[in-house]
Length: 114
Image 1: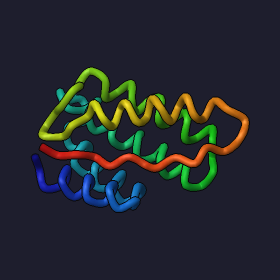
Image 2: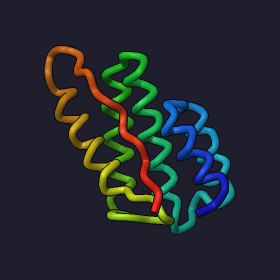
Image 3: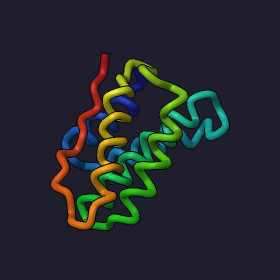
């Protein structure tokens, strides 16, 4: 696990989704077309979805969570020491919960490292 990946996870797990997004972008930017591109795009999108949720932006949360989970699925169940399966499962549950009329009270996920 790289230092920037670990730093982003720490920020994410403390609810600092924008900061996590920025750190992961610094890791992803030098190799945007590399084998881990979808992994970082997925983490970035999930973090953005969490940020949108915290701002009560239903459309933004749904769009970012859906795309983030899609990017992460090829890397399941674990990649680079990150347990992705629980994160993607949480996002899938969030997407179902966001289908209703009211605003669901969701507990944001934590990213687990091996």
